[in-house]
Length: 266
Image 1 (cartoon, rainbow, N blue to C red):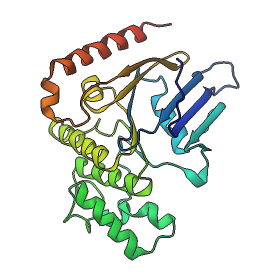
Image 2: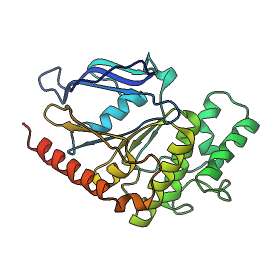
Image 3: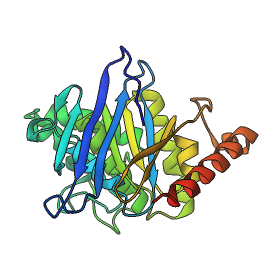
Image 4: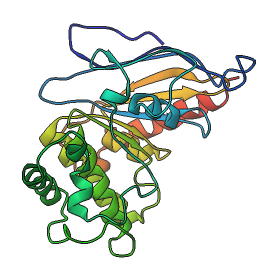
């Protein structure tokens, strides 16, 4: 796939990425590239789809600085990823530190940056209110003190406060019940609308992908690379009525067809 490089700011660049765990005898990912540019006043909501094991989560780990590819470069805001400019990531598994309060978990990134406690608490409370957790800030961030949905709200607030420009999300709603999952989708769209971050979101749920994304990229396996790009031309302001639109249904069917075609590639 070719990616058009415009005069917009490059947020995330994956250039010639390859991954092997046996010295190059077998390549899990080979010659993969991706360019995500800023959309001023809007941000980007990019969803990555692909069969299990194709490396979707690995790509997020590269950008987060948790793993380095065997070959190629990973850049965030034009700089190679390093321990000094890592990006926070929201996992499917609950990742809050259970011995700390919600307030301290959300402010953790600012603590590592040396921000004074009074300032980080104020900024953390702003996001705690935004994600609907006001009144829970002094609770320990542990299940069952908080529900699964509440714990993911903590993780989203923590990531957004630590790095408001980029959110990396690896199937963050996969373990939630359907009611909570739907409400979390709407919460994340509200955050995107208000703060305009670049969001990279991995999911296996095609209707969820179409509802949330403005761009969908599909990966093939063996070895993995991007082979399809679908522009989701729905209104930026979305709610559950969006899912009743005929064009939404058409896009879901289009993505399903593309996914089936990709799954049959050798």
